[in-house]
Length: 376
Ligand SMILES: [Zn+2]
Image (cartoon, rainbow, N blue to C red; front, top):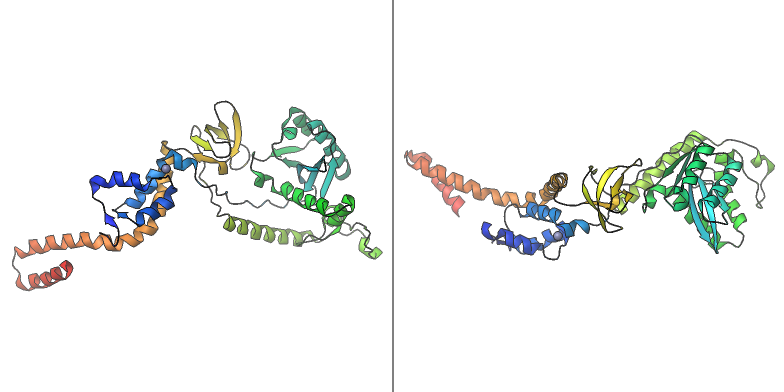
């Protein structure tokens, strides 16, 4: 026994390892189970290796998101904008949000095809100017060839986020939530939008001031002096924005136990967790953490968060073993102090036996009492 755990002889270890793995419960659970029943030297590492090589366990690994990357504040207003669609009362709207000022523009799109979206964007761009960069998700309206033709014609860069990975289009997603909240609570959508645009952000001036350098007049009376054009302190705003984003990303990463997954390599077999299909990594996509993978029937883009490296490939195994060793350290720290003396005893006893042959009285006596102590 080792404490309350049964020490398993080497010949039975593979079978016991299999039994520990019953139910494919992943590294942590398998280790917890083993801790209640069996022990042998290296068990923890062997569990990690077995689980890493288990296809069932790999496919079902929990989906901890990647650490959130703070989006940098653009240098100028309306330089980089995000767009998304929103449905309200049987109508579809195009929403555009400025990454700098958080100013939100919406346009009703009578048709939800890319022609409708393009028309909505033209209307918004005619008021605020054409942004340099437009970020959208991969909705069909944004991925049609007519949309790339429009981007070329209007001379802006179109960046798409990874499919099913809303986090990378976070600014637009947040704006959609804001607007939906406004629309649900108000019978006068335009007044509600105006209220949003003239209300200071909680870390700086109002979206309207940040975008246009002036406060907008609204039904709430203000002194005319307040309406004089005046640029807010943009340097101070940039600093507050940076601090806010640092806090937000830190909170997110802690709350979701975000973990950066290792990069994947070309030709690696992966499991797409949201579509539950096996596929092969073709190449890295342009966007960070994104890969183009071949599912056998089509090429799709997917974020690393949704890709699990499948076992039986050199890269996966090395990485899994490394992780296992790292994770195993905690347990080894507990087991080693007890495991080591046993080996030390064996060595000391051998030394004693060797020394006794030379019969150096005092020394042997001293070593012998040590031996008795160790034996007890
Ligand atoms: Zn398994």
